[in-house]
Image (cartoon, rainbow, N blue to C red; front, side, top):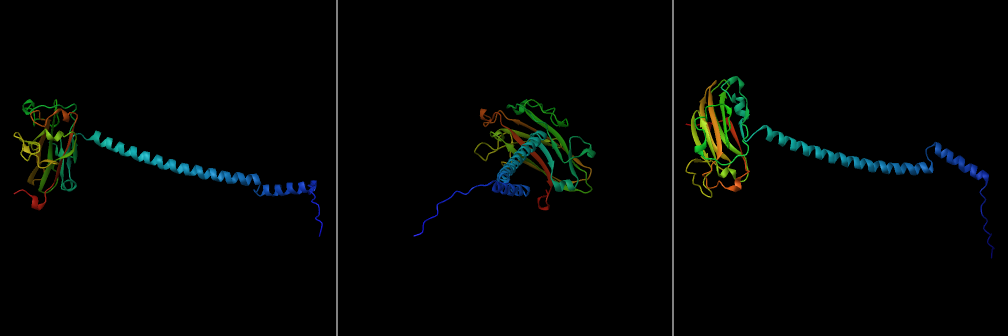
Length: 269
């Protein structure tokens, strides 16, 4: 058997310390210090984490900006255009059809908006100032009713056949159930109302709406260049309508009168 050599502790001499210091100095010059390497790894992790949070923050901020932009656009549209808008379809615009609040054909545009009526409550037909209606231009709303007069003009160079359609673009609290809309065309009035509740029968005092989304339609054939036609739209909540109940208070209805070119098969005889 061999006797094991007793363990002897290695002596750490000054020369060993000097060599270690020199090695560390060389690593430090190359950017390889133990502490620097640890610090670099830690800094890289922190930088990566910071970049991830920045990216997330950018996405969140972008989403908020887009949301606010959509709300702003909706707000601008609803504040710019009231409860009655008059507009001209693109093909009709190309043919020279315009609308205007006055008889000045040089001031024709492709969209108009009537002033809003605030705090509406129900009235009845007999309460309207019938002698004043269709005698003014633009908006001249009264207490609890809307009144708006405008002109359709042919600024083009050829005769056209056009259609007009008064559409319901928005409604709340079933306001359309008890509303009346009177449309004058060249001085001739007609009153429109939705059919009786849960029935196909028209109201006694009105012509029934064309559908749930369309109040009325009109057509003009051979509309000459330079010609114009006058329209007046009056609307109110009819107090004598059985559907005029407290539940509709605070409701609204938004309408759009759209003018377009008549298709050949749709032209009036």
